[in-house]
Image 1 (cartoon, one colour):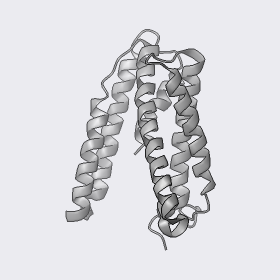
Image 2 (cartoon, helix red, strand yellow):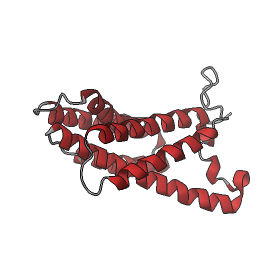
Image 3 (cartoon, helix red, strand yellow):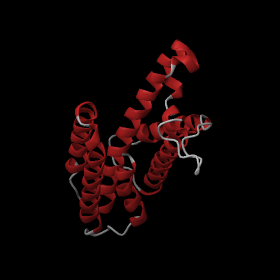
Length: 192
């Protein structure tokens, strides 16, 4: 039995490898939109398209992780794909993760620009850094506190969401695409 199996719901059972190809296609579209921005914020339809793509890939990745369980990284397992494809897939995976991080920060900057508001991203960024450090250390020395580390991380991400809402919705123009701002803020939590 795999670590993340929840057989009643069909979660963690695998057989969703096809989702990796959809994630790659959406990631390529995100890359094209990111290159199109030319260091300027996206506005109007292109901004909305970018947000929809970004949220789609985020939700799809969460669904993929839930469905695949501990087999989620099958594409980087030499026993399943061979060493050559493991290396190639690992490089592609790294590029996709880098692109998504860049798109995430660009999208937050777009939200600030389009709402005429401003907010600090440091609370969320530092909670990621400290969450990873404390999570790794506690997994070796005190694994019993790992759930508390996860809860503390989630609370920090909720604080970041509040900061984003306060900075965006309190400004003039904050009502523009407010549902998008909600999902962008929520995505901070979804990415954990």
